[in-house]
Image 1 (cartoon, rainbow, N blue to C red):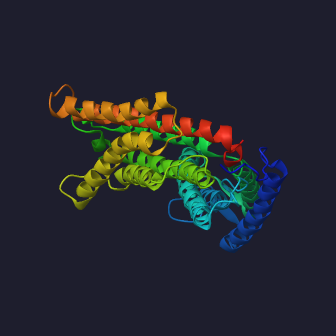
Image 2 (cartoon, rainbow, N blue to C red):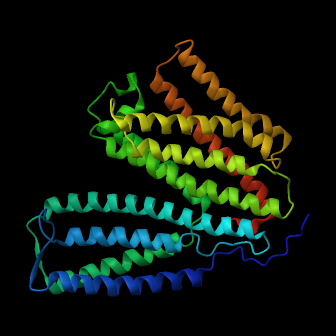
Length: 365
């Protein structure tokens, strides 16, 4: 076994994060000022909100998306450790995975933050619909918003890591699912399938919950598998077929995202794709529960069987619905989502404990 001899710093580099945030703040403020000056020329007064013309609210929403997407893409896990002793292949995988992770989180962050800003400005706009402000006041206010928002998101996102993302995914998925249930006019959705929530008034929340949760899981699990590959290269454990588990976890994430990308609309091509991605997610999860114990020898003996027990439980639940008709399909889906979420947390926690014990540099502090 190779000794752990790479230099690392377990403390987040606060000064570097501050410099990163200040640099992006300056860039965003200058860019926003130039764009705003061009778009408000010959308009001495600007409305707060309008549906068919330039307004303060529309500009701030645009700024929110652009800043949250690009700052997250360049700043997420910016200062986390990257192994220099792993093989060239693993280092390439790390480099590729880092950008896959960043883009996934950037999209998720951009959508969530922008959606929140749209809701906030829409509510505020009801009271301020007739408000017009002078261009100089708008310039100062928008620059102030851009500067404050950019600094906060750049500083926060550059110091976040895998654990934070897992909680974020759970919060977004649970919140989106709950909103879809509260908003839907179809009170009989639970008698058929939860996917019917994606095809009515609350569909945007249901579908975005799956899309964003899938993307965040992609980032978290991709990072974790790559960390394990670094340790395998250093002979901490033997797992020649770890790539099989990697493929199954990626399929789980792609399937989860696809459920939201292609809403459940019967008798359409989207319906077929929705079914394909749903089955991909469920099948990948069940296989991963068994494969994990066989291909990842870092788990203690008493943990091997509980991992496979999740898969056995999922199969038993399916039998309970399809063979014995003990509950409807919606109940089966909800139970599978529940045990799937618990298993992902279980996998993340167990692998995290092992990595923290042997290579804490690979984890965020």
